[in-house]
Image: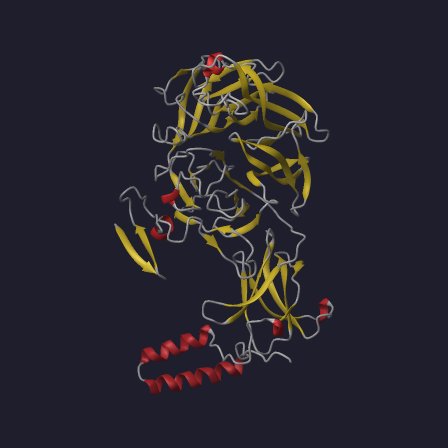
Length: 569
């Protein structure tokens, strides 16, 4: 059953039941998905107007989705003003967001180093032949830079992967231009080629403990990518395109090559290739009629267990946008019999194509999260492949254009304690009543907000009077204002255990530009509701009597709701 409704000027298409490809319990914001709110819909805050935060459309939701973890992604693209590192909760409410000095941002994660959790991401220039030249940043729980990690031997760190191992080292993808004979690629000269390197780097010294070169083990002829105009002048041929590295308990490396359509398993001591899964040099017999080894342009290959690998199978790219469905893929490999078979496949219900980028993450509870790269979507599945939650952070009508995209989307536990002060503002709400608004970018531990007032801005903490308190239920919290409130207001963030986490800078309510002595009394929601009830009972006389009685009763038990003060001369 489909139902079209109009709400606040926008149309919404609601799907109830499994009709036209929409699963049971789903809803579909027709306006959002067809660009009615723009190519990059945003959530706007009164207390933090400077933040650029994607507005999410939760197309499908389920209680079986992991709600205790936060979602981390890095929205960017032609429709955005600035690349952002962004964390939201299970309701889509903002937790933290930040641009990074005008740099592009990729691969936001939570990783552990020496017993502490850090936010890690790559920042730099991503317009370097389809990869990047930059630095990896590690932020502590207060969002301060703990380390800046660089590749060894004076090379730039690539954007595609950065993983901290249990031994406290870092795995980094690196791209380097080298001169190479191009005969295998169809050109009879030596020209520039992008070599892809694995580096394992000591995080304390920055020294390389291991390095592996794709050009030393792969031929140009093994690539599925035509050389075209590359290999000439300064246009290096990107024949391999490494996009992930994983290290297992045996000390060996697993890496994914987008243009080889294959995974390479590498000896961690000698660098020799142990085996190859997929592509022209596939070494495995496929027990699933080709479905275990026919992946293409894939990303984010990881060991899920000793014999199981997960990956995001794009199946397509810009030049071949419809050759195969995009899927998450879990494959079991038997290294003794050299066989491979599909364990589970994960397909988005809207048949989204991930033309580039993408991610596959297995959560601690067994659920799977797929990020769809240059299509602004991420989906959470049950381990079996059942779709649980499907979320868009850009219009579906623009998927594949790169207007809004995120290299990867992951979910993690995170605890943030920013050293900034909470942001506040006094603004009108949707009912035209004046409210005090407060938010705190990055603060995860705020349980309650307390509104305090004082007639003296220099008052010590004990002289600030509590005026109101409320639970923190979303990124921004509001308080209604009353005429009896003192001159200065501030907000106090309170932990669930009762201690204070932070205090906002006091606001002088008489200094707010919008407040003028010519404006009149504003009804509270209670007053408005009372009026509506009276009207429903019929008769203007009854309305007048009940309204007068209601206002009189309200004034006896509570201060008048925000009568605008006169500003001093």
